Image 1 (tube, rainbow, N blue to C red):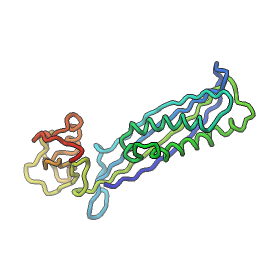
Image 2 (image 1 turned 90 degrees about the horizontal axis):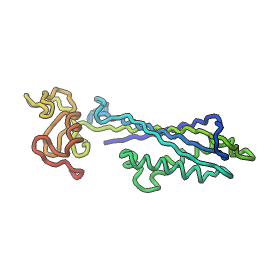
Image 3 (image 1 turned 90 degrees about the vertical axis):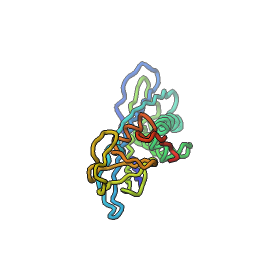
Length: 224
């Protein structure tokens, strides 16, 4: 399996708004957009055969960071708040956790870039002011878009222990025992370690409910 990953950042600062607090209130709105695109690749030509929708996703989550700035706006305070929110998000995202690891160092790729953009693009004017604005709230939008592109080789690579393939030489009468529909030429299928074959979408829905083969009841573990 091959994987390509890209990350994009976008920062937007809004106008100051009046508040009841006698200090500057800084609100950073974070939005995370994670897109997963998975394609099946012909092992001979390298060309994409088709996109696998049941192994693809497009998810969005959001979080907010609040800071009350009393005396001076420091990079350390902004960095600490932004990094904590990003780390919490990445730790809950399986793909990000696999890509960056579970250690603090692994998150620096995203955290450092995001904090620097907020500090330079959104807070530059305030840092240059002689005095911080009082009774004011500043909203900053930080958008982080992460895209994962997975490519599985048909008939050669695996997805969590299940072989992915498009087989045009199916035995006559072969069918998926979950949906009870015949396997058509060109259908995407997953073969479990026990050698039983099912439609890819069917078996993934099944395994979300129980980690066992529908036919022989063999447990599907990470070791497989």
